[in-house]
Structure formats: structure tokens, C-alpha cells
Length: 212
Ligand SMILES: Nc1nc2c(ncn2[C@@H]2O[C@H](COP(=O)(O)OP(=O)(O)OP(=O)(O)O)[C@@H](O)[C@H]2O)c(=O)[nH]1
Ligand SMILES: C=C(OP(=O)(O)O)C(=O)O
Image 1: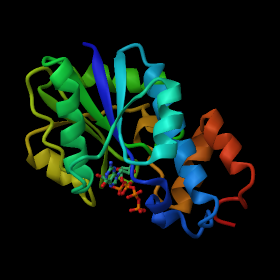
Image 2 (image 1 turned 180 degrees about the vertical axis):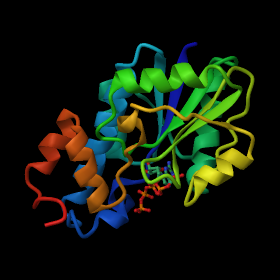
Image 3 (image 1 turned 135 degrees about the vertical axis):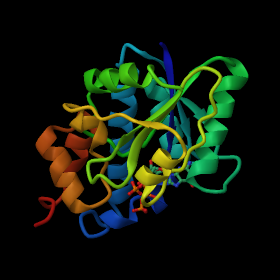
Image 4 (image 1 turned 90 degrees about the vertical axis):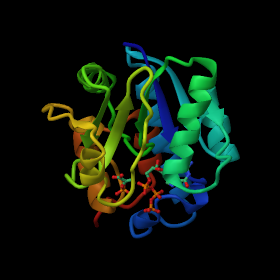
């Protein structure tokens, strides 16, 4: 199965507020952009991925991520994360009505293409499927096969919501890079331990050691 990823991204100046202790206001937007660049680059490097759509109103992010090969869709609904994801999936299916779509957070700086490939192969066995985040309470990926509505229920505690929605939980091991979202300084330290991509490596060079 060939997947189109739908990646939501808040305006950089407002994103990742929980990283304020780790990255000051002046540098946090660049760090958030770097997370998104590493996420998009790994997504595009995944053999099962035919395209990446980023739903964002941020002009700088739009420019940089489209230079990597993503298609940028404005966050026209402006009604939060799940409305943005539903809108992105619709934009994909206006062009390819039978597209399989997978929503993926933009904060996965350690994402590895081969691990994403394993998750998408597993998701292809079900009409809808999701992967829980490293903390075990949220979700990093929600997939919907051809002809299936995405029905995103992201946000705090989304793991139980996605399970209750009938999506299959993917209980795979060895896909830590797909689970490791970064909300806090501790998350960033965990992602650095897994090994982050080149954009985040460069953006972290000027930061104090996370958690110090
Ligand atoms: N397009 C769009 N993306 C969103 C919106 N809200 C959240 N996101 C993105 O959804 C993903 C998951 O959101 P969070 O992990 O809560 O990120 P965040 O809102 O930047 O983080 P905090 O400020 O710490 O809550 C990230 O990629 C965000 O950039 C929204 O209203 N529109
Ligand atoms: C968006 C989510 O949560 P967080 O803000 O913790 O990344 C989620 O897990 O659905």
C-alpha cells in the first residue's frame, strides 16, 4: 500500500510551549522547525510513502518544508489540530480519492524511515490503525486505508480515544523512533539518545544540554 502522510504544524512562534524551559522564545521556533524538517525528510525517505502534506499557516515552515518536497496546505478551518488533520486528508483525497492517509505528528525528530515503513506495513492490515506515543497516553500516527475516513481524535489522552473509535492499536516493538514525540525537555533528551536527524542536531548545537 502507498501512503500519503498528513502532518499538522502550528505556527512556529506558538508551537511547543512546553519546551519553554529548554529553548528560549528566540530559539524555540527554529527548533520546532527542525523537528518538522527531520520528520518530513524521514517521511519522504520511506518507500511506502508517495507524498507528504503539511497543514500549516506558518510561512517560514511552508517555505522550508516545501523545499524538502512536502505539499503545503493552509490550515483553512483554523479550528485546532483535528480539524486541520481532517482538512489535510480531504485535500489529499480531492486529488487521489482512493489514497491511504496517515496522520503523523511534526515533532518526531528521531524518526527513521525504516521504522515508519514497518508501522505503515502493519497499519495496512486494518481499515484504521494507530500507534501510541512513547509516554503510552497519546498517539503519534493514525492511519486510514482507501475509502476509510481518518476520524482523528488527537490531543491529550488520545490513545484511549483512538482505541474507542475502533482503530486498531499497533502493538509493534522496535519502532521507538516513530513513538518518540517531543513535548518536553525530557522528551528531547530521549529523542537525542535515540539519535535525531541533521536539522535537529544542528538546531540543538546552540542549546544548553536538555534538562541541565
Ligand atoms: N495545523 C495545525 N497543527 C496543529 C494545531 N495544534 C497542534 N498542531 C500540531 O499537532 C502536533 C501535535 O501537537 P502538540 O504535540 O500538542 O504540539 P504543540 O501544540 O505545538 O505543543 P504545546 O504548545 O506544548 O501544547 C504538532 O505537530 C503541532 O504542531 C493546529 O491548530 N493546527
Ligand atoms: C497531540 C497529542 O498529544 P501531545 O500534545 O502530548 O503530543 C496526542 O498524543 O494525540
